[in-house]
Length: 106
Image (cartoon, rainbow, N blue to C red):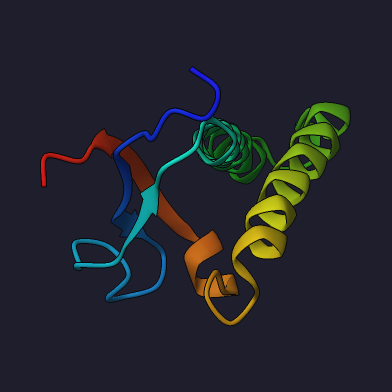
């Protein structure tokens, strides 16, 4: 599959900043490396949000080691996309958005 043109889109679905979800914001994904970065980011984002809710609900009894570990994974995945697209394109607002990756039908 290396070198083959892929046709996927990362589409904004939701987020904690009004206006980021449900918009026409999308990123075309055309290489296996891009797809891997997006999958890593989405997995890290999902895990980070889940542990954040646990921390909020559990308060001081939260699993701090796991919290720190998942935060590190999320930061690394976010940094990979920022480095790849540039901070002007993949901003801090994009990193706080929930994305889905779908096949591009266009």
